[in-house]
Length: 150
Image (tube, rainbow, N blue to C red):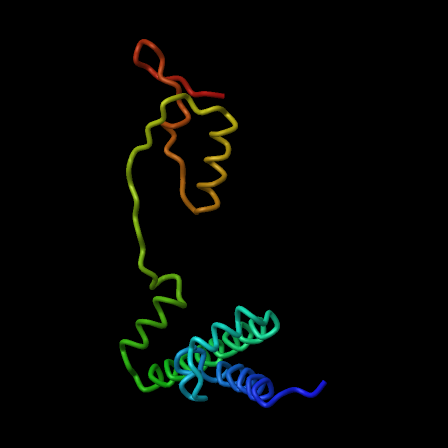
């Protein structure tokens, strides 16, 4: 069976949009560049699973392309001594320059923690690079003094 002209043009446009998304990973911009409507693009995505997968893959390739380009520009700006770029790079790529958040507070529980829960908390804090306040591991005695739990 011979394909009609409309079907052929539609398939060509699908390929054009996929190719354009690899260079420009913004649907609206890519559609304008090849003169198709966004509605057509989204209709094709809903009707054609293979096209949807190709478009998603193309968007991912395009995003990686733009990321590479942006990093190149950022590195060039750093080499030119642009202090904003230098600070941005350090805050996002060097542990010592990251924004630090300090949390403090007190946690009250309605019931006593089980030994298993205490161990889980200790492990979680250790993995997070934090330490446990030893008061959490003590049981208050009825007369006001505290005794370490096992």
